[in-house]
Length: 85
Image (cartoon, rainbow, N blue to C red):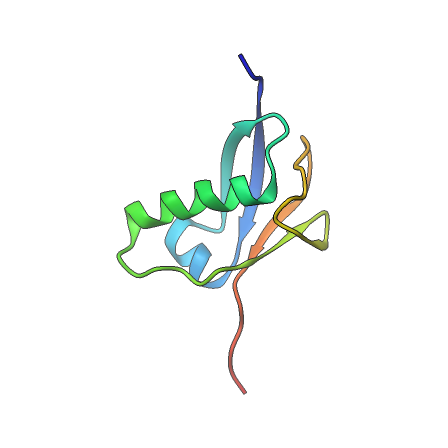
């Protein structure tokens, strides 16, 4: 059995409106940013019929690629695209 790790995730804008400003997500050890997004997108689909924009993910205050591995204690933020003038 693969051990799991709980990650605290901060959400902003439309993601925060849908899931709340902060959520805790439990993923298998060695999970990647893409796994986190997939889990959060599944949760969002159950709460909203409007699809959320694909966000950027900040990992320890730096933008992370989908293949970045998450570790216990990482600071994770979900940052949707921003439009406006």
